[in-house]
Image (cartoon, rainbow over all chains, first blue to last red; front, top):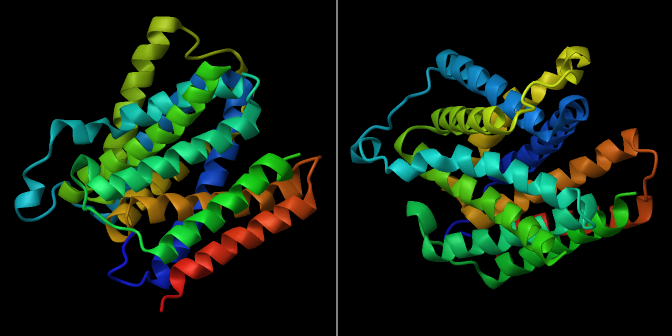
Length: 157
Length: 140
């Protein structure tokens, strides 16, 4: 959380739109899962995603290495984001099929994600910049968390 | 039950770890290239897992409508957006705003698609989220 610089409206809207993309992604991957199961769904999405990423990179001429010193130094573990993502699918599938169901899994996952992100900002985990939340940031965090909890626990069915 | 509670929390932490790692990679490359590595590494890992435990290509998928395969390309944009945002607004803001957008759009999707939908709690939830976002944007 950056208290040095006001958040630009564009950042706010982009992040909100990314959440909308996530809803669509989960929906379509869920449909795939209905036909072939969670593993098939995630495997296929990663496969089509790999091809789509290559096409996007070619079209947009995205650079494979950033300029300057930072472009040369890539720690090996920075390539493991996909491993963490693939593992998420397996772990989530297991929890959803337990008495927690979808709503419980979502609510607990949300908590885990937010607490981790605060820790990540606080200590600058995995080589990212450190950030300190302001009181106002924490109030905003509380409102979004409360709203999400209400939707997950009482709004879904 | 306890193990499943821990698994659900762990899943949320994994989402954050993934975003942090992709953010670090995009620092040395670009968000789109980091998203490419995310997908090819995940694909390789799931291929190995599928070959080990079986069930990678079941019978059902022959009947899948073509548009259900769009989730992968959408995911590429989503992962790239996450890295881009992380560098600009930090992990907590990124996580919260994405969750907010996911909740509000999820309510809209349910409104149109689901058989059972509770308007009142959903409306209260959406109002709280939008209030939080307004607070994030407006600064003294």
